[in-house]
Image 1 (cartoon, rainbow, N blue to C red):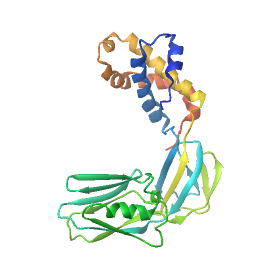
Image 2: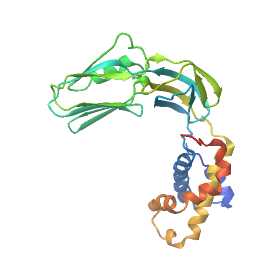
Image 3: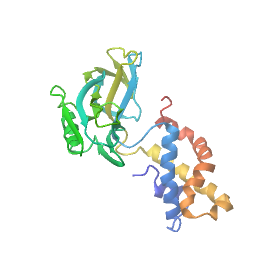
Length: 268
């Protein structure tokens, strides 16, 4: 679901027919990437993972407002799954961006930690056991913990004799008090190398009218800029998004920044 609306964009441009729909749709698709980059966030509702090593503070700032709920909050780095690799080629197993990634030689397998069959730590171990040359045993203490509490790490197996490694997770619960949307107070200070991980649901299930208008206005301005550049009109359609990104993103965003500001994250 794109943020900008084709109908709103056409209305702003005074276009009443469908002759420009293909080009406008390509521009609208590019605009989504532009504004999410400029606003330092993703707008669609989803489960997100916040991971930080040592905040040295009680306060935590979560991106992708509105925050609809905290699914899991934990700290530490406790081994929860013991993994063994028996292949003769180099093998790597890692967790990154809510995904379990296993590479054996030139074969790469990815398993989403948000898939319906991968809900818990025990499910992750089952998924690893289904792969050739890999075996895994989940800790009985943590087998029912959510799969998304696994920390982002890479574990390297260069040789079949390299032994075993534990996948680690943040499993010590943290109490969070909502201070304002996106800002939470933890009842402890996360020091030094202590890893804090929060899984939360954020973003919009239905985009606000103001955000839709802002994105549509940027799309309309980009289309107008494209019309003024005769050299760009000679390019193939597939090049438009690239050209617009290079030449007009900054101007279109800056011109409409006041419209986007209420939805932006100004701090990382």
